[in-house]
Amino acid sequence: MTNIQLFLSIGIPTMAVLIGFLMNNARLSSIENRIGSFESNLGARIDGVDSRLTAIEGDVRQFYRDLGAHEAEIGNLKAQRRA
Image (cartoon, rainbow, N blue to C red; front, side, top):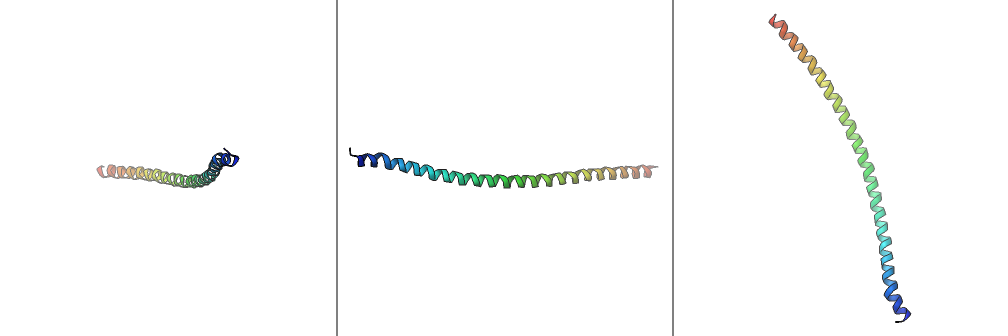
């Protein structure tokens, strides 16, 4: 085998593998960047949902406080009516 044949049979496939590796590595970096931005966006959305749920929880607590007060007033009115 001559040196040119050896270079063609070993060198070109090796170069193709290296080029493929470099291109794949660049794609992986791009995917990692997309995932990172998605995670930060998702984190912000989760924080927004958490704050909304906290506000809803406060509203529900106030509702039950008001409901208890109204039930007490209704109980007093029923007691006055019976008397």
